Image (tube, rainbow, N blue to C red; front, side, top):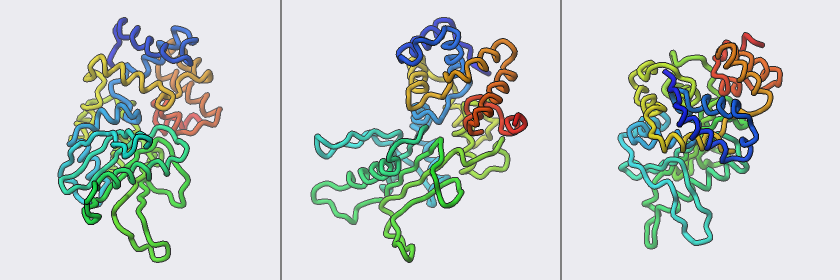
Length: 315
């Protein structure tokens, strides 16, 4: 069930929009449509890094996520501060989404990336190398260095030589492929590479991809995802957020890095028609316009919430 905003809530969320210059000149109707599209959904968008952090700061959910992606069993994790201490006053400040470690000392950085950014791979390497560096203090032994894993979920794809869901990187000998060590591993999980209209028959990794991509559009009960993933849905419920955290989520959804592309002129008429003639017809009209603009199907799914089968029939 969608949550309906009170007039006071609507006013507060529109006030958040007005904090940003790019929204101030929009009409009241356009602002209301954007607010309702973000805040009246039953579940948060887990591709927003604020929502991702909110849900996976639960150690058990984080452990379950890591356990499905890592080759070894993850029995438990403990959260660490998500800001890495600077070594010198001029060092770059590093703040990450979620950082944790296992009882045997393995450390994990878990990131959600909504948009591609310059030097992305360098940044992921820098994050991981900073964690490795931080394990030793003066007099420490190199033998005490524990493996560090950087696991990044991405709402976009990078060019690769193969087509797979998860790309795993470590240091290898160039000719033989011999592993140098497990000091640093980087996992890139590119969510758009999974194209399926339902969770039926998916592996655990595929199920996580589906959930992270589609939680915003999920309209059922938590248990509809299956008992294993029901706690993720419960933690993502919009109604569970206190008022202050709802404002934080709204603000993060519309910042330059995290906002959905809801205000492009080509979309506005479709949103208005959706209100007047019916939500489903409005979404289908939006999808047709986006297809005419040659936008990726994945983008159309994100904006409209329509299934891939419905969009394919509109071509």
